[in-house]
Amino acid sequence: MSYQTINLKKTDHVMVISVTRLGDTAEAFRCADELGEVCTEINHDEEIRVIALTGAEEKSFAMETGLNGESPREDEEPRTRFCSLVDPIARLDRPVIAAISGDAIGQGLELALACDIRIASETSRFGLPQIKSGLMPWDGGTQRLSRLVGKGKALEMIFTGEVIDAKEALRIGLVNKVVPNRDLTEVTMKMAQEMASKGPIALRYTKEAIYKGMDMTLEQGLRLEADLYLLIHTSKDRTEGIQAFQEKRKPQFEGK
Image 1 (cartoon, rainbow, N blue to C red):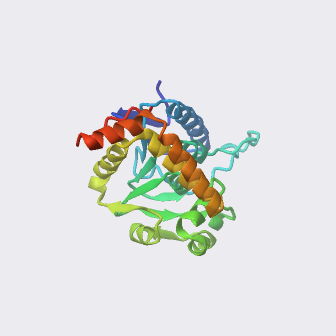
Image 2: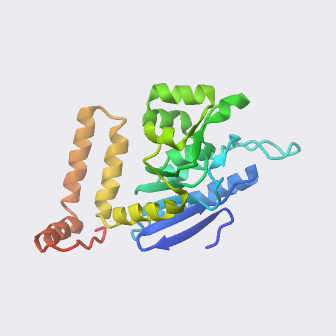
Image 3: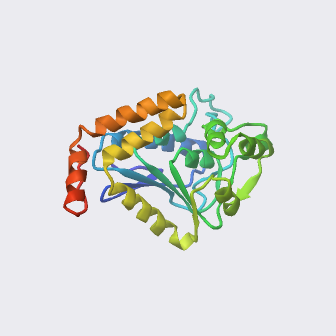
């Protein structure tokens, strides 16, 4: 199936989603719908183990104006739903890596925050400047940024609307790696393929344990971790992993 705002490329067990630059609100609504459709399909495709989210252009993650569901034309009725680009990505049950070649600004940064790993180019910048327009982040920015970099730094970035460079983003833990722009695709795909070689059930359960555990007490989180660990022991992948170790070969996981 062809899409107007995203491009798809599947390499082995890795699905690459490239988002085109969103020029107006209509395109953003279309992209939200298309991402929703694609991510639903991915969650039902056992062949896909890791997702790499990229921008088709350098400024694909730079969306400085909050898309709050308003109509792009004054003579149209206001839209009644929010245009969330983030929700489809956040609902993915397997690892998602964001490859950020340019700036991640506004809703674009909120989109990157919904990913599990963020790899940025040396020239990338990051910010949530909505406050400068009398607005606030609304697509998860206030919640995910604070959980990632801590309450103090998140308050500073959002209250001032400051834009930070890649070096600072790495220092505060906003991104996991900073690489030269020419190496971004290679580094991202290498990490994605390395993850995809691991047990797909273990990948999904690990993500579930970490994210759900953050909203639980330590005792509840430990119980969830133990329950998921025991579930893995009922899988064929667990048996394959043990046999591969004993036979000193690379395991061939099937996600079963």
